Image (cartoon, rainbow, N blue to C red; front, side, top):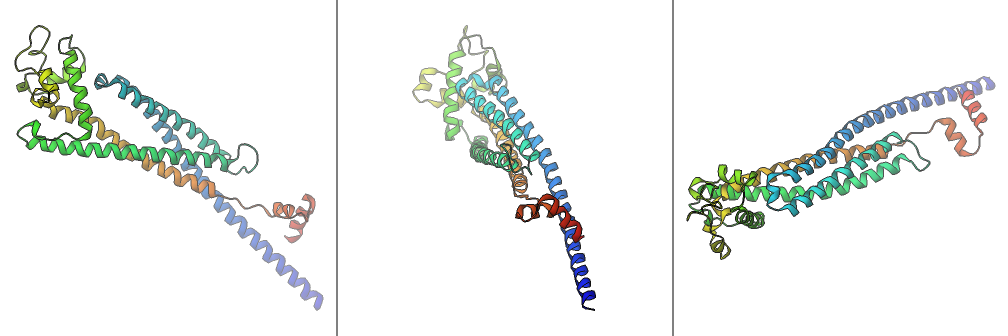
Length: 305
């Protein structure tokens, strides 16, 4: 009877151990399935992020070829350089993130998944900080320009509306470019903008102000330099200029919001992939304990089953 009880207890213990092992394996399969889904979404979002980098490079080309680049070539070149650099960095860290996801469960060697994903996350966090700052600046600029646009619509004169920070540099560049080219060929987008968008009553168009004739209604450079705003080209065409500048700044701010949200989603997915830690098989656990060799560990598992 004692032997039968002992055998029954051993059989119950073996059955319990087998049930626990089966449950652990089932749980592990569920965890691996969830991890596989996270990887799938990570690759999709990361591929879309790659398109964001390509879009930034394309936007840099637009900055170099934009018609208003003639007003301040240095600023546009600097903006293009920053956009190209950011786009290239994004493409590099996208590849790093993809390699990190592929080798996610590799814990040894120079190409460890966690190490690559951690580097990817640090780069991503840096980009989020820089783009957040740029986005806030663009949105604040757009908000101030919207306020100016509203005040200009109700003001009796453009001169009565005070300049905001973004306009101070723009007005100087606008005036300088107008006076530098008014007696030239007057080709290009700037003079097309002046003729089509500036009020006809301002008398500052190419028909009235050119190398052959300079009407009395044309802006006067000396008076403008002395502070007479009514004689400055920018003030005469201020509403149209603010609207055009707002059409550049506002989309950049909205694009920045989209990119920041996109990068935040990538941060969350990356954290999930870094935190994933697959459970070792029972054979591996027995071998790591140092008490069993590989063959002994297999025999121990088979006898338990």
